[in-house]
Image (cartoon, rainbow, N blue to C red):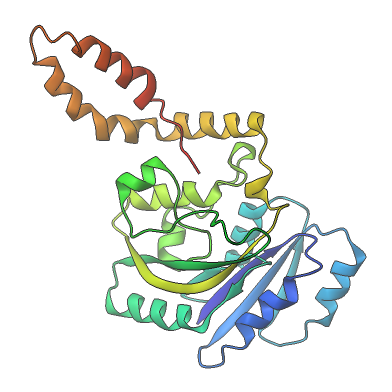
Length: 265
């Protein structure tokens, strides 16, 4: 079974479209878990009442954020494979087909992701560029959207999404980094598999500078060892270079900037 987890907060316009895009896929056994993350608008609550398909389950929680909502949805789901879908995006059938095939062909694959099609406000400017998996690239910045298929055992092994106030908006990047330190493989689908709605009021577009600084500090404290592990070998070479006028400068550059390299998203 496939469990589709849709966290939702005050989504009056797009939630039904997101759900319908999943329910149109009839050739897979699936369930849809909609997690109402403390919506306050009555119109939104009315939408929940209109969803009558037996494959859809709606659960309610106080407003605790995306990470908590996704974790809650997974804890109540039954599927071996999990798909995370935001309540304003749309899924395509080929995502199911290619992801399940990948999981079944290689039991070491823990996560499958693919390309988005951007639409909506300012859709001509992609919000991010999705590329084949590279740990080095992941250290430089997140390029994998939260709309991924993930094997339940992989998700549970790393403890799901971490819930922390300074992680808001970067919960997915944090999860990918933790998964990258396990034996699970990332599998990239080089084709469009979901539709990403670009909204001017999205979380990615409204992060203020102060909050961004807190995020960077959190990632620096949590993952600084990964940067150190990756780059220290290059500077061991410099230590063996005698009378190099640039060696001191390069060491300063390393310790001051590379070890504290911002995690860009």
